[in-house]
Amino acid sequence: MIDLSWIIDPIYIATIFFFIIGMYRMSHPLTARSGIVWAGAAMLIATLVTFLTPNLTNFALMAIGIVIGGGFGYIAAKRVAMTGMPQMVALFNGMGGGAAAGISAVELLGTINTTSSLAVIGGIIGAISFAGSIIAFLKLQGWMRPRPITFPGQQILNMGVLLLALISGICIVLNPAWIPLSIAIYLPLFFILSLVFGVLMTLPIGGADMPVVISMYNAFTGLAVALDGFSFATPNYAMVIAGIIVGAAGSLLTLQMAKAMNRSISNVFFGAFGATEESDVQIQGSMKPIEVDDVAVMLAYADKVIIAPGYGMAVAQAQQKVKELADLLESRNVQVKFAIHPVAGRMPGHMNVLLAEAGVAYDRLFDRDEINQEFPSTDVVLVIGANDTVNPASHRQGSPLFGMPILDVEQAKNVIVLKRGQGKGFAGIENDLFYRDNTRLLYGDAQETVGKVVQALKKL
Image (cartoon, rainbow, N blue to C red; front, side):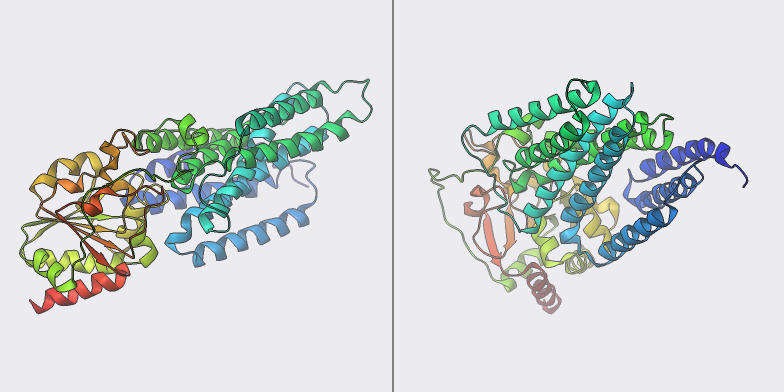
């Protein structure tokens, strides 16, 4: 049989460049789709060339695993709605962390050597990412209470479990001869404790912080994969570089999202944000409803309209109707812009993707820093399903949202809020905006309501 193992490393290096090109193209909405194709092609090539590794066995089992996993991923990706994308990302990222932990386990079951410590670190990080991502999935899916789950002494317990996991990992590497079957004792204990810590670490984090958590666990998975790549007797360069790229990108994204909420990473993971709702805040004013025809008149005679979408638009799948409304207003010489908060929705870029799917031009989307200065000169702001990202409570000393940069929509001449009912946002904090004198609430499903506004506009 011809030995082709010599081409493995050169192809791995080539795939690294494909990964880098893919990541670069994902940084802009216009090229993001092709970036995913580049990265996916790189992963496919790296997977196929691995089959040329000398002395590799169990080809049938690997092929079965690829077919089952790939088939499940393809079907899930085709069927999932955009509103379910965050939990799918959490679930699939968890699978990556679990795979990294599995690789570490296999390495540790072999010969203990100088790189075993890397396998231990990769194993604990991968296990934490797996367990934590599963909890994030359950919370986002609504199969578990989304609010923080806390109890007395929680952080002490968490640190104790983590410390025991680390001690178990050290015992695996040292493999003391005076303890019979030390690997058999410490290896299961190590992974059980790591998984338990991942669960305990995620329980006190509320649903409002899940986008940050998912991003952080994505970085964890990349780091675990990179460490596993180093732990092999012959380092796997594709795993190392790909893992480092994913880890770095996930870390930067996590920091950016935390900055967008004016929160530290430690506060996100250990602050139990949203564990209790505000109960002693007295907001002046009342919620004032408005009818569809009145909204249509306000929009028709406005010079400038800004639309601020949120998760409610995603739930109602209203982006197509929103696009139709924007086009109709522009046909009447109304200037229309979209205000996009960095953490609107449940994942980074959620609103951008939805609006791009509906055909909204990218040059009509403006981030918070660009658009905030324009609200005072805006006739009507249409808030569609957004809550915490437009809540002026962020300016109120003592509010859990205090200091969070928001879209300052309350500065507009008129604010129309589309929402299903009078409930609070995902963070469980009452929204001052809804009680302002210049705010009116249009109740109902966003897709249906926007459609009615479009029809009313056409009649004017």
